[in-house]
Amino acid sequence: MTRFKLEKKYKAVVIGGSAGSFQGMVKILESIKPDFPLPIITCLHRLKHVRHGFVEALSLKSNKKIIEPYDKESIKPGIVYIAPSNYHMSVELGNTISLSTEEMVNNSRPAIDITLCSSAHVYREKLVGILLSGANKDGGLGMKCISEKGGITVVQDPKDCVIDTMPKAALSMTNIDHVLKLDQIIDFLNELHAVCKN
Amino acid sequence: MIKDLDISDLRTITEVIKKTHSYDFTNYAMSSLKRRIVRVLENYKISVETLISRLQNQEGFIEEFLTEITVNVTEMFRDPSFWLALKKEVIPSILVNHENFKIWHAGCSSGEEVYSMAILLKEMGILDKVTLFASDIDPVILDRAKKGEYPLKNMELNEKNYIRFDGATSLKDYYTEKDGKAIMDKSLAQAVTFKKHDLVNGPAFTKVDLILCRNVMIYFNQKLQNDVLNKFHSSLFKYGYLAIGSKESLIWCDIVKKFILVNNEEKVYRKIKD
Image 1 (cartoon, chains in turn brown, purple):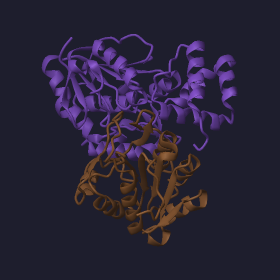
Image 2: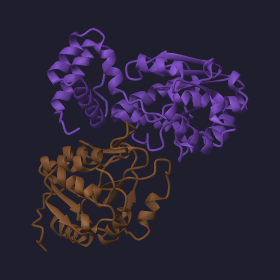
Image 3: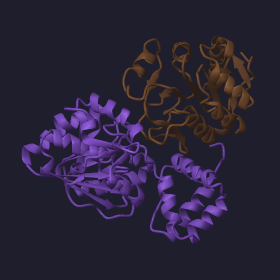
């Protein structure tokens, strides 16, 4: 179980995705174990005016606690945080979530760059960033932030994506540590689980 | 956005503003304030040192800065289900005891929600019974609210929201089109008093029956949220209502004990204790 040479230092996982990422996200949430030791902070592009149903759909096959956090909510290990519709989601020093209604970024609110960059600022080298399938370049800058702060970066293999624009944009913008198919991303998270537990 | 700003830079900037001007940003939520200031540095193509020097020495710069860093993204009838709850539950409940009442839009930004409220009241046939106050920290944006002119391209989304709110007619009936702008009907704003007011440093407001402060306190830290909620408490009549954004929560504030949550989904609170 040391295929990815992971260390125990990691404190959080942050995941971004857009078009074509929903099924992948469902599979990830279905595959990781309930006692996953890190918080999973997730920003997926979604319809702005639909507040309901997203968490429910992601929860169907998962035994994990999945929530759309309130502003100022504490970040806890093992919980999956999903950016609510029409809000940007950031991580604050002090390990809390903050939400905002600032301008759209990359034509998106929530924007992946905002979640990723703010997480990188707080967790620095202790952050794992994963970017899935998507149809625009959002997330590329975020992955660059993570890489610059010394965190580890993973993108879904463009060949494995429904739409490969997003991972390709990230690959062209910054150093990516691992390019993995969805099944391998799940292996990666399982190894992270084993390394970081207790 | 990749440009990074140290916490120490951020502290220096907020201290300078506090010392030189009457505004206090020290208890704003860090991540969004940082993004806003980085945005100013990028738009003006200046360094932190230049920003500080302009804040201290350049006449009129603080006003520009204020407009840049406050978030003024809003919609008419944002979260239509909230506006439906106002129409069906909150306002009828106020009307049980008061034929005339007062509403305060705290942090009204460019005024979209003020016009939404005026339209709602007009469709309920009670616009002339209600006194509306709209306040914001930023005089420039307050002027925009007073004018009630919006880019025509925004009206598509506003109209969609209005339809989901189950409005009585079409939004088009409330504005005229001119030079790519939607000019809101002047009669809507007749009962509105626009007032510059700083939630952080300003005094408590006049007493009202309903306060709307949606997605404003998310830019504050918990200490400041608590202070502002205290002000709202003293600005509300007993049994008055407070509406905040759907993903905001006040459970961290001490004074929340003096309120009950009457609509959890739309985050409408009611003051139950003085």
